[in-house]
Image 1: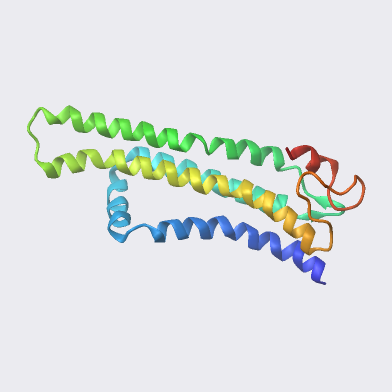
Image 2 (image 1 turned 120 degrees about the vertical axis):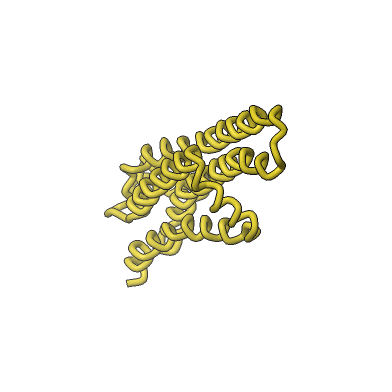
Length: 188
């Protein structure tokens, strides 16, 4: 009973961790900064692009993470592993998209400086630079968590389920029913 509970409920619990981390980061931001961000992204197409791509990638990764943490017979369902690795690498693009938005916002601001604009207008023109940076960094952070959950979760599930926990160097022997060769091959 304990083992099946660990192998069925614990993967779901692990899949909640990245979502909770994202909420924690969002809540930990100063309220004024969070409100400024939420007001300014409404008129920023680069933010919508970053957030839409990031959330789509996150949902796909979380589905793959849940599937990857499922215990199937002698080991984990490893079919999603290559997809998770590739999608985690895609998270590296979000800071670059944020930087692109930052540069665009700065260029937009500087293009109007010669007209003698008011400070309020400078802030309005410059805000896409700041929000794009925030969106890119937030999406990068959120999208690296699913891979970490898989790596950490598998070891904990095996350990709590009565198997040997692995550290990479002293892994269980092949055919022992805890890890398959594909998981060992995936580890550095």
